Amino acid sequence: MVANHKSNKTWDELALWLDAIGPQTDSFAGTVIVCPTMAFLSEASQKVKTAGWKLKIGAQNVSHFETGAYTGEVAASQMRDQVTYTIIGHSERRRYFGETDAIVAEKFQMAQKFEIKSIFCVQDENTPIPAGVKIVAYEPIAAIGTGIPDKPENAKAISAKIKQKGDYIVLYGGSVDAGNIKTFLEPGLVDGALIATASLQSDSFSEILKNTK
Ligand code: PGA
Image (cartoon, rainbow, N blue to C red; front, side):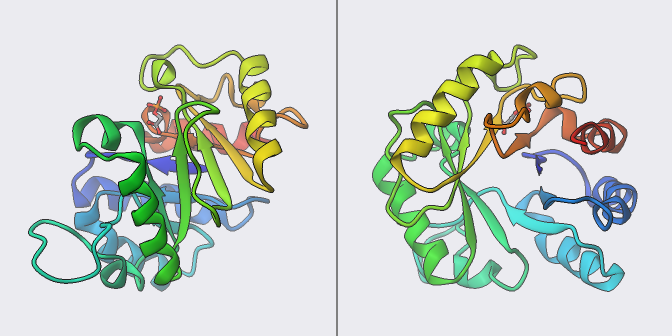
């Protein structure tokens, strides 16, 4: 289960969220990953380490450049000690920040080089997936932040098509909440979920974790 906080939360708000969710991840059967804003990766990772929670930290993006004169970029080499995962190729990155298939493939290479695991977002079954990717998040654009998730049958069909292309872990993302999470996790459907809106409040994220069982 991946919580993508996007550009939300002050440090104080994130710290409260971590205090609420962190302890629950210890008894959770699967992996729980939180992707806070870049600004707090370091503090968040420190807090999780100190508490000893099973919760993992992910970035929402990584630079396709190594180090050097790239104002505003955060390189994989700079975040590798703070994160285990990074999201790559989210549709918001593609749409608002001009990330092309070629750029996201370079980002994946950079993450690989610095041993950060990628959660590679595809918008449909035709989005190119670079060789070596292990975790794919299927996120249909119309379902993101709209409250109208993809139909589970459709998510299942797309997930099956993606799995035909490689031995991937497939996540579904787009208006997942505590009420519908179970419909996506039916056997043979998807392996997990990428959740933004319903992950922001710790109570609703906690409900989601409970309802996966
Ligand atoms: P949502 O977003 O859960 O708010 O629909 C999902 C995402 O963008 O990863």
